[in-house]
Image 1 (cartoon, rainbow, N blue to C red):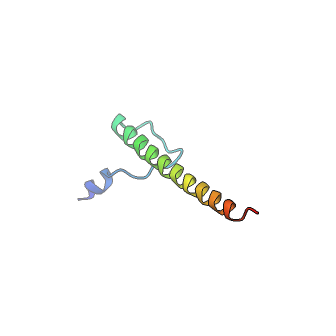
Image 2 (cartoon, rainbow, N blue to C red; image 1 turned 180 degrees about the vertical axis):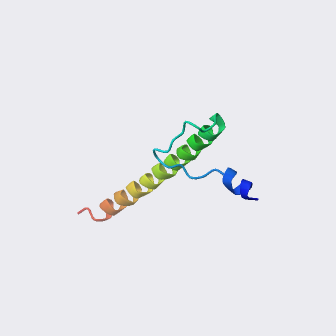
Image 3 (cartoon, rainbow, N blue to C red; image 1 turned 45 degrees about the vertical axis):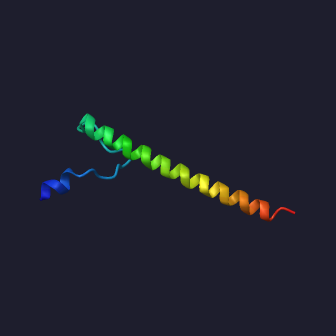
Length: 60
């Protein structure tokens, strides 16, 4: 049971040593980070739209 916990993918930390990771582990981390980038870009887009709406309401 402890093996299952230790084998699960963990969140990526910037700057961690990757020399001992397998190609599979590195590929999984890339996918994790790409997903996070997409999530962050969506958040930026949502905030930009909110700002545009607010600016259009308060324009005189």
